[in-house]
Length: 469
Ligand code: NAD
Image 1 (spheres, rainbow, N blue to C red):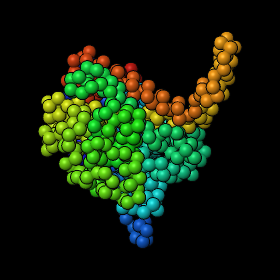
Image 2 (image 1 turned 120 degrees about the vertical axis):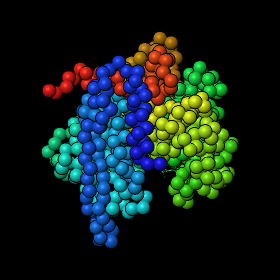
Image 3 (image 1 turned 90 degrees about the vertical axis):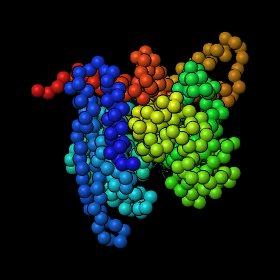
Image 4 (image 1 turned 60 degrees about the vertical axis):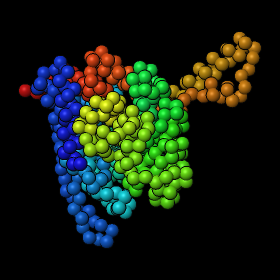
């Protein structure tokens, strides 16, 4: 399946939702079209001293808010159309969860797993230098983050390169998010997208009428889950579903194949097994299965958390899951979506479900601009007022709380707790709003409701900004 199909699907979803919009066609076209693209080729030295030409992209989809924001993907499948489609999803995602950024995305056409760390570092630094040269990166311009095939390490190289070229600029650490903690990152960013998937799924399945329509009991406890892709997003989504939601992870697939156990498996131990052996296959207590076939196994929730176009007209009829939770971007193409919806499956769309990453990235960016961590500003104040309140309660009742309860009540929140509670609130509120629009405007599905909400928010802003003559 080509990147063209993904690009067509994103535009198709847009058009389907835009048909319900009150905005004029010109404004809607401005919301839909990608505003700027930088396509580059640059030479990088291989480890043996020879030279390789690397192709890369950065797409800035919408300038209705600045900076633009979006991850950088390292994959041999990267293409211009894929990057533009991903950038468009970022615009809608930010609008949906109230993050005041335009959408962007970067893509570098390499296979990171097959490259040395040295080569990845040279590519990342050169790519950053190219972005700086063309003004496609900066705290107020365009702020990258991790995506498929990249992580904290690459973000660290980006900020270091930026710092060394633009050393006199203010707020330089805000030029990229998803950085290591030691380089002004924020706790909770690594797990944010996966944890947001958990909060989003929980908000949806806690709705009694939604669960009933699917023939499920409300809530996540005991639900059978199959996961595709044990990467950053997939692993943390499954871990939170298992630990906080008490769901049962019955199957997981990776590039090398799938593993299955109808009674559930421990994803934390499974990841450790993969790190030790290089494969999820052979994980004790599981049977090995074909990775494509696993998507069609019986389960309540299927979580595609790898790449786009995994559920299409080719396999949608055979999917048995009642809920498809789009942790990845674009895992269901438009033809697949039509079939799933006709069969009564609930698709929880990517632009909502994986927005936890950009939400916490926004907190990181704010923290970098303020130059102070969130807990530092409020924890001392909270601790003092908690102490006063507790002392007053103890005087009034003449009793003392046990030591551990006292400590818990007195201490103000740490930065991680602040981040997680803000993420939880963002995902819960966003779901409530999408759900409301879905019902109130009698829309066919959640995806159309999410797209419509996002489109109208971006269009609203364009119509207020005015258009340059
Ligand atoms: P990642 O590179 O950390 O993990 C992806 C995993 O999927 C890898 O382990 C890879 O081996 C596996 N995989 C690839 N093809 C597969 C296949 N056919 N079957 C099974 N497994 C396969 O990437 P990630 O950051 O977790 O991103 C995953 C998806 O989530 C992407 O679509 C990305 O755009 C989206 N996303 C990521 C973030 C983020 O913060 N990282 C935020 C929003 C959306």
